Length: 330
Image (cartoon, rainbow, N blue to C red; front, side, top):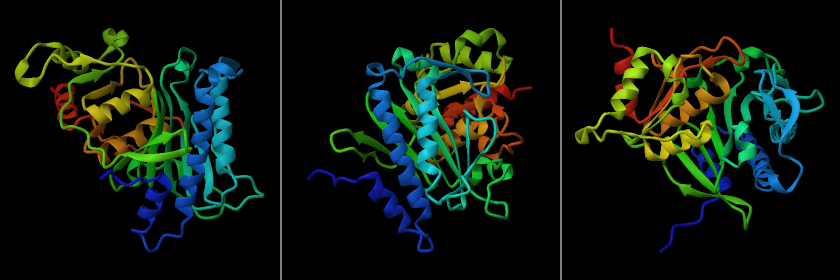
């Protein structure tokens, strides 16, 4: 017999039933977000057919050129989430400050942080891109959200996930009870459960890093990558290099197949703690992997600013532990 068809709405509802105290607000929050990513997926799929490719002429808070699809994704998520009554505020990689909920709408007890379109520099060359999100509970008094509600360590996340817009559209998320993956069936417009209880292999066969920066790496990273290139059949080396340049794509491959993704501290950190590293670390740990700065657990990093950047090494448990042994040698 074939497996039963499980929509993401049904899966979320079943998870809610495990918590008798739940009010349904968190479930409704996720449903609103799912609608937004479906609309983004639609525009990504037909981007080459309409006037949505290319630059807007603006720069974001990080000094990066803003793509038209960046702006569309940012606007779509905000408009899907601002009036549901579930959020006290939002924060986006594309905006310099926290995003308040308009006064005319009910405020809620959750905070949403997101990267609306990860890998946007790859949009015009038709490479996989994605959306990353993270949800926290409000921790400050009052109705309005504050900066302190956003600046929480990753281990306090209520949920985290990403959407990858590739050969298929897939949504992967966790609420701290394992990791599930859903693939969008465009014929019915539903995300269907395709990857139940995702587990990252203990060791992989590939590594992912931008080798163009190799001359700037710290000694430990350089020796580790050289080690991966050495031939040793007993340990499965040499590893294969796989690097897309879109975090969602590189992380997704590593999550499913195992291995290691590295963006070390030098020449300088690039990935944002709140919008990229922390949500991906939460997913990785829930799937049996490890995420580290090289010196400590990503989920234990205490944020000090909204757009803080951190080193990010994530992947299979044995591979990441091996990397740490190289960088922490005295």
